[in-house]
Every structure is written in C-alpha cells, then in structure tokens.
Image (cartoon, rainbow, N blue to C red; front, top):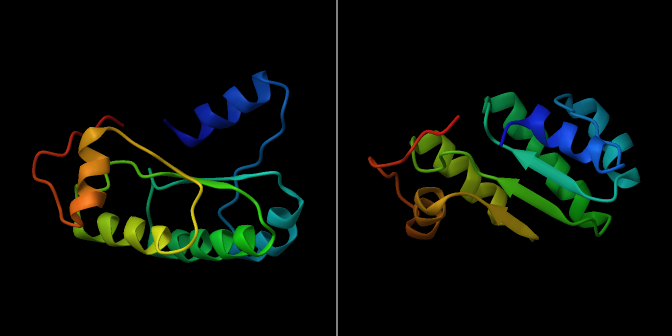
Length: 116
C-alpha cells in the first residue's frame, strides 16, 4: 500500500497522520505519535537511516510500529534494509506471501511479485 494511500485511509478514519522523510524531524514527531508506520516502497539510503532512527525512537517511547516491507525479496539492498529494521523490537509486519517468505528465508527471491 502506498504511503499517501495509508495517510488518506488514516485521515478518513478520523485520525491524523504525517509523512516524514527528514531525519531532523524524528525526535520531535515520534514521541508525540501513537504509532509508527514504516513503508519501504521508495527506499533510499538516507531514508533508511531516517527509518532506523524512527524505529529506535518509537521503541524508546514504547510506541507500536508496523513495517510495510514492499517487495522485500526483490533486491539485496531492500531485503537487508528490512531485516535490519526487524532486528529491533517490532509490532507488526505487513506483506504478501512472497515478501514474508523472503524475510523468513533471509534471501532474495527471483519470484518476488512487484505490486507497486
């Protein structure tokens, strides 16, 4: 599910949401949030660093967080990023069968389905 779609679903449910890519904003936003949703749909190294900090701050503040691990097994970089995020205390992982199996096996999957 795309980041903007999730944000719109949350808004329609009467909640508020914000999409943050800036590492500088993490210490201000995450402690105030009720939960954290990490989406690796668009994965860049600088965003990965931001995601890792967001997860650390969420865990320190006892906030639940969800990993949307889009096509986790499609590339080594993506798989490694998702596995690194999951090494911390996570609350929920969302994905299709191919994505979950890639994480479970810890290896790339040439049969990964790209749905995005």
